[in-house]
Image 1 (tube, rainbow, N blue to C red):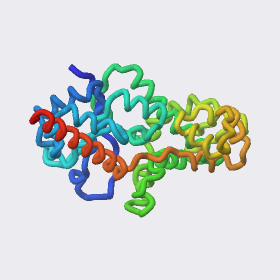
Image 2 (image 1 turned 60 degrees about the vertical axis):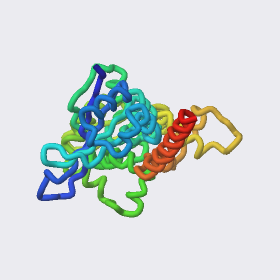
Image 3 (image 1 turned 180 degrees about the vertical axis):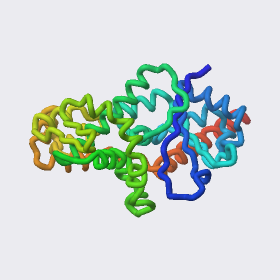
Image 4 (image 1 turned 90 degrees about the vertical axis):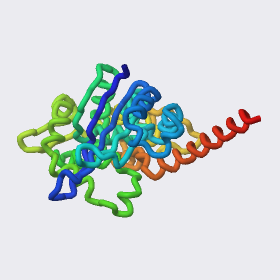
Length: 300
């Protein structure tokens, strides 16, 4: 038996009169990827591309590159199309805590439906930490006073930083499409965090928030950011070769009138599907060459 946590991630509606045509997107977090793929290949072999020929171990190896998630797409299920991704629990926890790629962590900053949940306390803590980090990063990029919708727009936009689809205009209003119809769901997801945050005045009945923008307040927020974002900010501010302490650099940023802009520039570049696919193709070619070499050795 392997532990599984399954999320149904939110996909923005395109105002289709036929909701059944919208593809559902599932993410499975599993403790043992090799065993999971082995069992799934036995039960749902048709879900896989030609990669099924390489077996569960090699599929798991390919999964480990890029954002650390393997997707089966265009899978027919109960009269509609779905896709589902598989990620190891450890990789997911790392992304939730540190925003190394923000690929799955970014999705989980938006309303999702948790279909099955294991008792992994580290995963539960990481899920909450990811939401708190999203709020903190958004606070730093927003003015002193703002609406709840402004906050959720900022949070929903975090994971689209660096996504080429947002640049060339596949759907420039994607963030708006996510937030506007789902403000109550965002409120349910974030209300406890906002109410417990000592640096914000949350006027729930007015849908307004006021945040501490003093250097001391901003320094506290900067120190609470995920490691990857902190490192990116320090690399933007600290001249090469100076090697100052991270805390010293973040204190300097906290006093900078352009603190929010620096944080905005430092946002992690979410791994795009194209980049992840390119990396997985490279790995696949290496695996194929290795298998051919093994065949030659056995033949001799």
